[in-house]
Length: 421
Image (tube, rainbow, N blue to C red; front, side, top):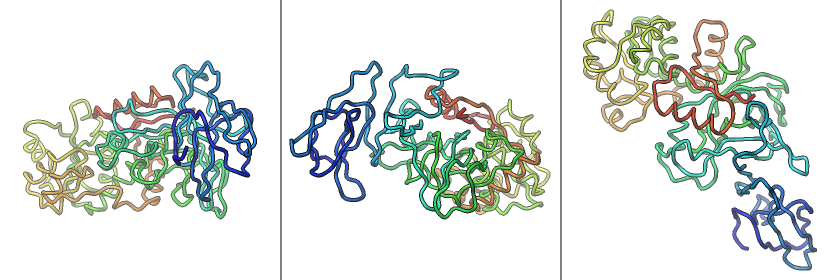
């Protein structure tokens, strides 16, 4: 074998001279080049090895006799074990939060994908628990919020090549610090926190938050207000930073009349409330069933559909001055029909037609990381702003797939959240 990465079971493997590898209960999935430049066999779970000395030549590695099949997959130096359906379950059909292998290594569950597609490409896998390095902390995740950008990434809509290795899923989280790395003095074990990963999973090196343990830079974490529960805290990351960034980009002021499309969604509903708190007159566009909800957030509600321009003009107390699009290019067209200059139009949906018409693409890129989230979390904890959670689902594969299917369908009022326990 001369490949640096292999998947599947190994039949034969060459032992590197003067290296002690594995034990009688372990086998290997391939030869992997680690950061020290050594290509060595990497242990997988539960494979029987017939041990021989290095001098005796290749050792024979045989698959285990197991009633429950597993498929080892080599990724970035770790072995991920995809569990077959019907594995050991805990209460309510969910697996216990942690398992361990024969060596006592703690294994944690995580959601990832290896190819683009719909929610069916998502897999639940087990990976070894990682220790936080310098400047980083490990978080026992209690809840993770889902966002439309998640499925746009794993579906391939955001562009780029198909993943060469498994990718994590999710950006928002809330949980409890359970380990700190060297040099971290701002957080301690036991602190309740929330946040959103800075590097988007699938488009960089950032981890996904649909996992039981998350290792992340300590300076990206926000303390969770005591009055804020973990589920609502997990719903805030992307929507808070996107809404704050968008309103900052538009420079929304008390004398503005602001139109917000998709006003009942996660970002839209947060933008409506924050703009209203800033003193602006807000007109929220939504479906018929969400009009009362929009009104409860402090905005004038207008139903979308034919004749929208006339309804918006009639609802506005004075001429519309700015528009925030949280849905798509048709609302940039609406803004132009209302007579707005492109400089007064912002969108969180980077669609080419909107960009071509001069709308400013905004959102998290205009946020103040941590500060916007810290401020918004405080407002929610104090009851000044509402964080609407449409549904909470358990952390199992079917539930996660169903949640993303619902999210892809649109018309979700607020956020969907996955609760780990």
